[in-house]
Length: 432
Image 1 (cartoon, rainbow, N blue to C red):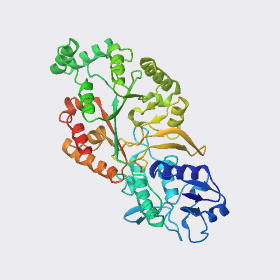
Image 2 (cartoon, rainbow, N blue to C red; image 1 turned 45 degrees about the vertical axis):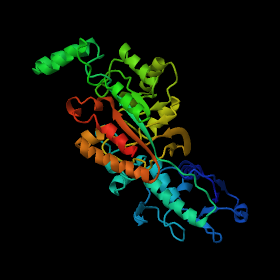
Image 3 (cartoon, rainbow, N blue to C red; image 1 turned 90 degrees about the horizontal axis):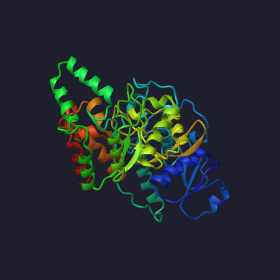
């Protein structure tokens, strides 16, 4: 398809690449040559302020010709039962799908002043998606499905490759072991705390686990490896390799058992860094943690997900790019299920402040175990029903589903009692 626009800006290049390449997966060319466009006989789209003849015309709202960040007037309406904004007139669509998609996927609203939660994260309740009740839907993909249907009617010769639903499992290892590999000081302190609280059960469990009489409850790795092999699941493990801190209570990074675990899992799955909460305040700490994982694996690490989903746009992504991270999996909310960027297709981060697309691929997730349990306070059966609704939304557009799990979810231990079967039930539903 040939697309005419009076001036090809970096935002226009990015937005058309997102929709035509990443989602529709069709070839296209952008041109500023109006004569060439008028003489072209194949499928073509005019994206400008003025319709030329009777061509496929989408009136440009103007956002993609702007530079920088400013308050945008967001007024919602409905189109084919879907929420839309950036309405336009005299156009084949009632809204500028390219500007609206750019606004959502670039996380434009996160550059604007906003309220943060207690962990200094962008609060889901501040988002357009939450306020307008489409957080649970991959809105951009749904818009593009409608656009594709219009294209098919207008251009019968245009062929669209059939996209397939896909799934990737991601597992965060914040704490590989509950009792083991905590170091002498922390272990003694835990015994003292249990004794002070008269918790005889905890004392016995810790003692017997340290003596090798009991398995550590969080050592569930063979269980999920077996399940993932059974269902042929593509998996990424993200390891926290931080110094001990208030929000970074992982195993000792010097533990040989812990390091051998990482190497063992690397034989069966992809491995990424789980940058600590503390690393958000220090690039040096981020660099140290990435180097630790690379020294264990003896190879470069290019995948990441922020601990606590601590994502500050654009700062976090710039730091990752500086360290040659190519793929990040932080795009989602801790407090709610759904689509933070309103899309279920991986996309490249666009830095609005410097008006440039980057080489950092963002992989948005839509389901996390901790969200279901700690934020939504759901029973496992209720959690499964909520997961299924998200999967159905993604299957409906043949998108990419990413879930976030933690190794303790399989433990059936303490607060995770009754949750160990949920993951496989989810995989069974995916494969129905």
